[in-house]
Length: 232
Image (cartoon, rainbow, N blue to C red; front, side, top):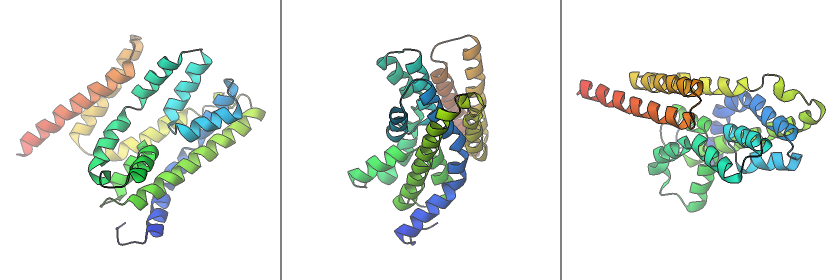
């Protein structure tokens, strides 16, 4: 994909390349829709959550916390920690988007997901805002249609969240993760994060997700620096 293509063609290219992930996220969207309705949210509230938040893991956690009666502050803090990796995505794209008008920056920032970030770095040799907006917008549409389907199905199949659809969350992250494990630093990062996550979960330590993320980032950074020194 090159910047010599017409904007419409660039958007189509982005839509086509992210399509497998859009299809793969359908079970996750179904789960969010059905779980929201089952947890006591109205159909409109559940759909608005997908329209405004657009972060599957955070939505599932927020719905569960709402069901348990958690306060607004706790929900906001927890979802902030879960989505904190997006700050890193934003920093990685800052140099490419800082010259764009504010509406473009806001739009691309809202549509920035794990899937879009991976697609951008895997397929886009040069930054192209039309490619990203096409991929991001089509993924957003697919996510919200899947949520709507989950809402409708959840009204007739009340046990839908218990059918194992939550495995879609794990499967998608595995699909996103495996292609980038090409260097030792990436393996160190993933291994350290996984071990820390398991240990903090077994010890029931609060903030285990954040600790695992920071541990993985630190170990990966150290490994990357060591690899760079060896190459020098």
